[in-house]
Length: 175
Length: 121
Image 1 (cartoon, each protein chain N blue to C red):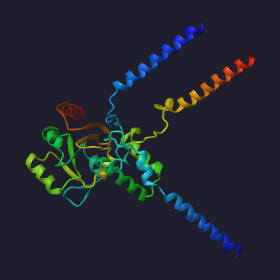
Image 2 (image 1 turned 90 degrees about the horizontal axis):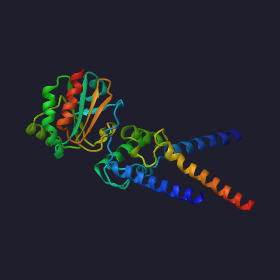
Image 3 (image 1 turned 60 degrees about the horizontal axis):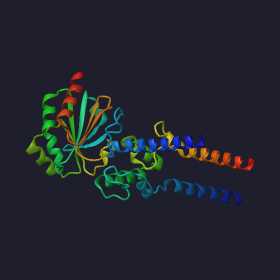
Image 4 (image 1 turned 180 degrees about the horizontal axis):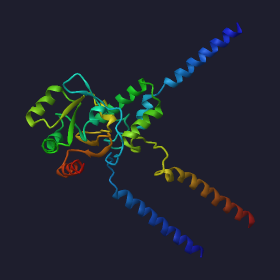
């Protein structure tokens, strides 16, 4: 009887350890903030790129949907997603794109837009990257799709892909 | 004279309390924050773009008079529990918090029963 209990305990322990390793090793160890949706972005205050004014949450509430895209001229993946952003700006009238130029030199940013085209309805400047923290950004390119209540619908970590483009199109056209 | 001494002591006490509340150690906060883009490094240890930006924001918030707890809450809201090395107790992780205590109680019970059995023999 006692031997059986010991056997059972050892087998249960082995199954438990294997289970823990199986779940742990199958899980991606790279953390991202994609799951942080449904939150309202508060305290939005961004310096306008070229005008002497501040872009606030009130400005974004005027749009049905806003895609806030963090980009920089020095960021190579930003070049990859640029065509998608241009297409979104061209095709989706229900969506406004706010570009946030992140830790960049103004001249380089302007040259980037001149060379590749300007997909943005408005551009803000985050010279030291401080504003990006309020949006939960940890690398660029990163984009956040919000509605007129400033609620996050989806976060896109990395460049906007064709699938992301289709997702945004679907959400924006539902309205 | 006595009243003057009492007033002096009250003012001194207020100053000490103020000094304590405004003394938020930024390095302690940096050590407790995980650098999301680094492998196993805290914000304090890392020199990555992300860590540098977090440091700037934390220093700004300390200057604004925010407490250590408020700073953690702000960053958890933006990046999730993963940003802090010591996540707050919530319904998802309560088992992790309770587990050591359960093990402690279970271990204590086993030892107690074992000793009781030995005494009976």
